[in-house]
Amino acid sequence: MSEPLVVVEGLRKVYPRGVEALRGVSFTAWPGELTVVRGRSGSGKTTLLNLVGGLDAPSEGRVTVAGREVTALDETGLLELRRDVIGFVFQTFGLIPVLSAAENVGVPMRLARRSAAEREERARLLLALVGLDGHAAQRPYELSGGQQQRVALARALANRPRLLIADEPTGQLDSQTAAQIMRLIRALVRSEGVAALVATHDPAIIDLADRVLELRDGVVVETVAGEPRMTTS
Image (cartoon, rainbow, N blue to C red):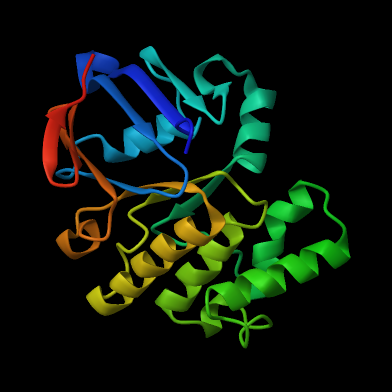
């Protein structure tokens, strides 16, 4: 790894009435590594992920993803970044009910104007990768919660993103299924060579991380190989 995929510098987010969610947060994330963001409810985990993913704008600071300065992009640039560079996984799965598992995985590729043959082949490969090769024709309501999250994960990887952002991806799952999903995410991070930022408060899941960013009062305490250090600027 010659350089980080994500570089966050001096990130601040102040909401109306002076509520400061993030206070000068700085960190890096590397390809092939799983970084977990943890903290109490309301600590700013979702805010941080949204800023890195270009879903929100900071009050101060800079975010760079794959060499692109996210905080300097216009709306067209942000759309391209979210389509081509970043894959998102959310707690609520976000699958389209009337589409099959394979068709849900194909949605990002439709937006990228991939051919039908390419969409079908990529969806087939990804569903097999997440252990759902026998469920391609099923719709979300025919799948368990864990299976739906696997479809959502396959969809996030459809356009071969370099960064995977997952906000509480196991929040609606039982502990055993949650651990399976996180082990799958870690395996995919390794095999696909992507960087992953995952927000969670589950201690068992945190143990699977390569790096942990703990949010405390809008400040990050980073733990790498058990060694904590402040990462503010």
